Image 1 (cartoon, one colour):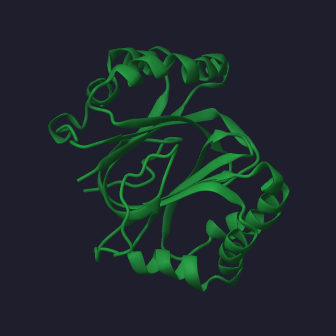
Image 2 (tube, rainbow, N blue to C red):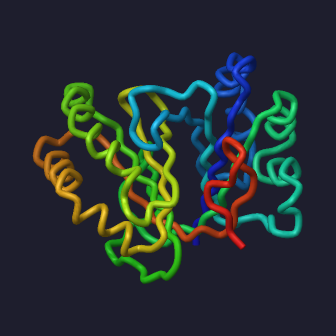
Length: 241
């Protein structure tokens, strides 16, 4: 079994320098954390999906681990949870710079592909699940295909925010233009499939990615949300009872 945790962080504008600095400094405590099998420090796009325009106030950490710590008993103590997940240095950093944070814990249920050569699961069997589902789609775009990618993805990204059953989506990425990802939460598997396979523009983009070979690496994962805590811009994007 594999779990993932995504924490999205918003810095006050006056502390953006420290947000950028964290992208380098946080590597040390994350690399030394033996509970974490894989981690990524990420920037965020502005419109909730693949976005050429970065949101300098918003950043993210994504980690994968075999065993998820028991977070429920202290779910109201956000700083304590971040200490358990990421260590004291990161937790105190966010508190010191008055960051707003939202964290979601997830159970990986199916998917395919890789990230930096790392495969977390490889199955073509879609597990049946009821209730909300979270999806992570990421790709490394070939330099020669960057223009084609952004020309075709922009219309899909603009329509995604109006898709039936979409609860929330966040654009994340390692590198502007080239290494992009979208994390989204849907009311059900059916809603997610309807968007992915029934929307004409999205189907056409999928066809072009295969025919024109836009990506040097890609990954698609589905998760069952376990719990969330915190907020973004004053609200929890996906409150769970």
